[in-house]
Image (cartoon, rainbow, N blue to C red):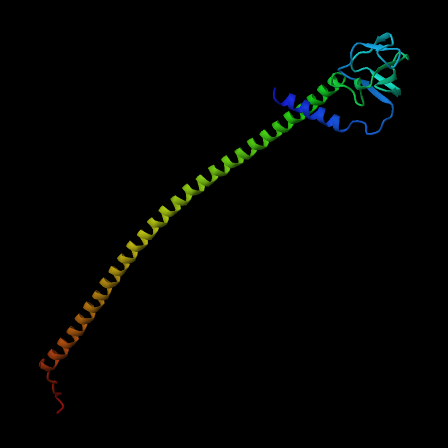
Length: 205
C-alpha cells in the first residue's frame, strides 16, 4: 500500500495540472520558488515593502516588463517577478486536499480489493463444492458399473442354468415318450399271442 499512495498522488497532481485554468481571469498563486521579498515597483531598484509566502493567492493587476503588480489578501498592491506567478495553486498549498483525495481513492481501492477477494473466495468455494459433487458422482457411477457387471454375470449364470434345465426337461420328455412307445409296442406284440378264453356254452343248446 506504501507504493500506491505516491502513485495516486502523482496521478492527482497530473490531473490538477491538466485541469489548470485555461483563461486568464486574474486569479494567480505565488509559486513555490518565490523569494521572500516583494517590491514597491517593477524593478529591482525599488525598495522591498514586504513578503509573500509560497502558495499565497494574489490578484493580478498589471504587467510591466519582467514584473507583475499583484494584490494580496491584505489589500496591498506589490510588485514581484512574473516568473514567480503561476495560474494554478501550488502543490504545497494543495497538499492537504490532494492527500485527502489520495486517501479517498486508496479507500476505494481497498474496497474494490476486498470485494474482489470475496468474489474469488465465493468462486473458489463453488469450485470446491462442484469438484466434491463430481467426485461423489464418479464414485456412484463406479458403484453402478460394478453392480451392473455383477447383474450381467448373474444373468449369464441364470441363463446357463435355465438352458441346462430345459435340456434336462427335453431329455426327460424324450425318455418318457420312448418308454411309453416301447411299452405300447411290447403290449401290441404280446397281446395277440395270449390264449383266448373260450366261451361257455349254455345248457339250452
